[in-house]
Image (cartoon, rainbow, N blue to C red; front, top):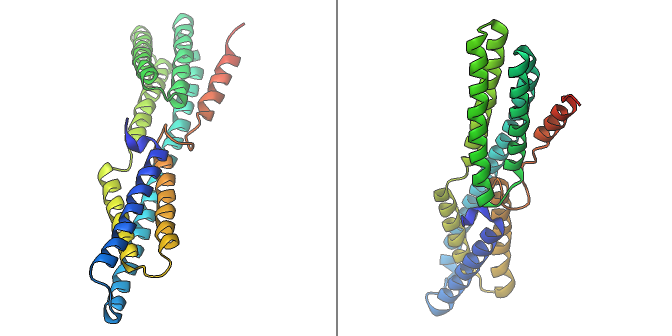
Length: 255
């Protein structure tokens, strides 16, 4: 299982690693070189600079995650619009081809809704396989109609089908576009270093102070991982536009 897919695991790992780093710094201070009055001023400068850098990187990471989340939402809306438009454009096809395309589109949009709400990996693989099969059937149906009736209106319907297939590819690319694991590793390293410095410089309120920063940073990591993960956590893109389009398509079916 990908650790970054589960924000709760990210939180626990981040909290444990930072807490250990903070107490490791405290251990080094008590067993090693203690800061003198002259050293503490320079140490505070380095520690504050490191904490500022950590805050900036967390802010940039949050911005990256939100951008990717918004991208997934926009592509869900675009995909629903493309499918709904093509369902209406099926009227431009001959009656038999139009009925077949509508039937395939109805099955296709059901698979696209399942793609957004399913978390089981085995079921996701089946959805991907069914989606690929339906895409091949849709293109085969529209290409046969375009070959048999090469009129401008049929070509318009074929162009709409191309948008349907492309929109799924854009959606998949957006779901793969995540914060790189290398970036997570570097942010985690900086967070651990900051907690090490906090532990090394703390000499008064040992227990409380050494626990505050790990919790705060871990909560930030949890939020970033939750927003960045398409399926994990509690913040996910709801296929509300696809569901609305599916309901519209069902309402247009002849009784």
